[in-house]
Length: 447
Image (cartoon, rainbow, N blue to C red; front, top):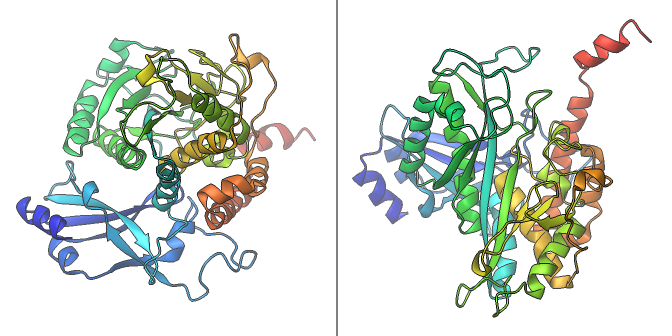
């Protein structure tokens, strides 16, 4: 805390956002004057903040009575000093700090997303290894939409016109929003969010930003902050930025591709490559684990009902856990690289996934493959879209598969799996109670 106190004083900070990411990746926490934050001893939040649904409810505790402490206890928030950043868009000097959560006995809150990711990374550490990740986040820019009954539309660019067709990889289409990108780059630089590249994706006003590779928790933090930053910057330019997996019918969905490699903790060498530069057995085992466990972990990569609308045949999104070299139709792509940069790209996760949880789940699948010495299927050279579906097609099936996978429960934490599944079950039940416009359109007078 001394480091944080000194930084706040040096920067003359007036207000602090004390943040924790919840199950959905939403920023929860408290805002307070900097002096109050420095004086506060044991910042606290209710334990149930970590089982809050995206619509503000919670799981059915009558159905799952042992999910939370019956006394409705608070948990202690402890700041991670490495995450303190100035908030560049704030009017008054303000800062944010991401926190970890702990129980009264000092044990970490095992259902907190940051705790889950730390748990998985520690498993690699026990083997003398360090995972390295690089997320790629896709998102749409859309016109402000205050009525949920109306579909989303692309926003106006600096030309005064909206995109009427797809402009994949178009530099001019990106430049339509130059004032927005200038703010995003400035905001990210101020928060140490390391953007590698920006490009236009296939959808109308759909963009992709790649983050530089690094340690998993740090990159999850950067992804968490990046999503907040883009949404904030877009609002200042009278538009929305959305990380919904499938925000518009007829347009491609948005993904969070996760590039993964594993290095030796001793010398930093890539354990996916042998001494002669060839693929190592660990590389193949890692892919084998992803192939076996991705379908069981699907709920962690596709957490919402909308997530599964993205994962359709011929929609630039995977429908199975096939793998291949430089093949974008598969769920697991091995990019062209030299031996030290050999990695696996998980293309299954949606942009709507919690980055802490999705990264933890992907690494857990690969870890299990290495531990179990799983061999992958042969790499696919053709289109994986012509092969059968292997991944769950909806939330209900995904919940069942996750709950039935003891191996993932062991790595991620059995209580976390129960809590996460209960949250998603409640969200699905709420959604199921909504009658859609499609039902009114085609069933009202026809059946």
